[in-house]
Image (cartoon, helix red, strand yellow):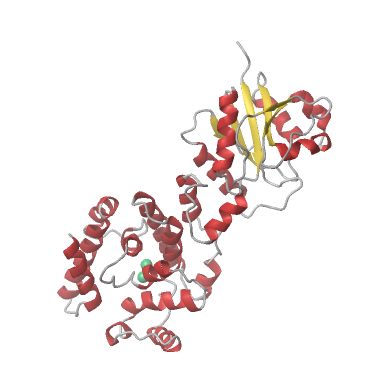
Amino acid sequence: MSPLSIGLFGGMFDPIHTGHLRAAKAALDWGLDKVLLLPCGTPAHRPAAQTSADDRLAMCSLAAKGIPGLEASGIDFREGPCYAADTVQLLKKEYPEARFYWILGEDKVDGLSHWYHAEELFKSCEFLVCPRPGCIAAHAPEGAVLHRLNIEGMTDSSGMVKDRLHLLDDAPDLLPKSVAAYIAANGLYQPDYTPELLSRGMKPHRFAHTLGVRSTAVELAALHGENMQKAALAAILHDIAKPLPLEEMRALCAKYHADFSDELLSNGNLLHGPAAALIAQHELGITDPEVLSAIHCHTTGKPGMSRLDMIVFIADAIEPNREPYPGLENLRTLARSDLAAAVLASMRSTRDYVLSRGYPFCSVTDAAMRSLTEKE
Ligand code: FE
Ligand code: FE
C-alpha cells in the first residue's frame, strides 16, 4: 500500500478565501490523500494577523467542511516563529508513515533555500507549487523536489477580502458563506464597538443580549439570503442608546435636528431605536442607510420594512438570552420560514400586551402592522 500523502498548506488565512480553497482542491486533485490547512500563530517573517489564531482556525474548519480530504489543524499555534521544518517534524510524529508535500506559491520558490533548516526540510518533504500571476517559474533549489500544479494563478488576496468586508460586503465570490457568517457573527475585521457600548453605560446583561441579537441576526440573514455584515453591524449598535435617560435621548435628537413625533420623544422604549441610529450616524460614522434604518426601527417597526429591518427587529425579540415568554418558541420557528409573518406576530403580541395594560399603542407600529398585513 502506498503511504498516505499529505499536503501541508501553511499561512495566515486572515481570512481564508476561495483562492486558498482552489489551491487546496487542486492539490487534492493532483493526488494527495489529505490537505491540512495550517493557520500559524506567530508568523516568522510577517506582521501579526488581525484576528486571533482560534478565529482563523475556526474559519479554516468551516471552509474545509464539505471538501473531502481537506482539514484544518492548529499545530502551528506555537510560541515564537513557526517554521515549516518544525511543523513537518511535529506532523511526522502524528503521521509516521506519511509523505509530506509543502504547498506554496511560485513567488516563494526563489527564497526556499533560505528557509529555516532548509536542508533538513528538503529531506522531509517535497513541494507543490501554485502558480502566481506574473510570476515566472523559479529554479528548484539544490536538494528540493518541486511539483507544479497546473491551475490558474491565485490572485484573490486576503487584503481584497478585508476591503470588501469594510464596505459591509459578504464577498460571496471570495468567501465561503459559512466563513462570511462567522466573520459577521463575531464582528471580525470591523471596529470593536465593545468599549463604545460599555462607556455609554451598557450593563453586562444588555451587552449579552446585544451579542445574542447579533448572532441571531446573522443566522437569519444567512437563511434568508440577506447581507450578513450589515445585519451584524445594525445588531451590535441597536441598543447603544438604551442606557440613556429619556432626557439625554431627547437632547441627542435636538442636537442632530431630528424631527421626531411627540409620541416617540415621550417614550424611551420607543425612542432608543431612533436615538441609537443618530449616535451610529453622527458619532460613529456609520453611513449605510440600510443599517441606520434597521437600528432606527428596531423599537417601532415602520411601514414598508426592508428584510434587513425585519431581521434585526425579530432577532431582538427571539435572541437566545431572552427570558421565556408566551409564543417565543413559535416566533423562533416562524422567523426561520417567514420574516414578515414573524414580525407581524411579534407586533401583535406587543399590541395585545400594551392595550391590556391600558396604555396607548404606538401609531408607527400600528402603521407597520397594516403595511405587513397588506403583504400577507
Ligand atoms: Fe432595543
Ligand atoms: Fe434589544
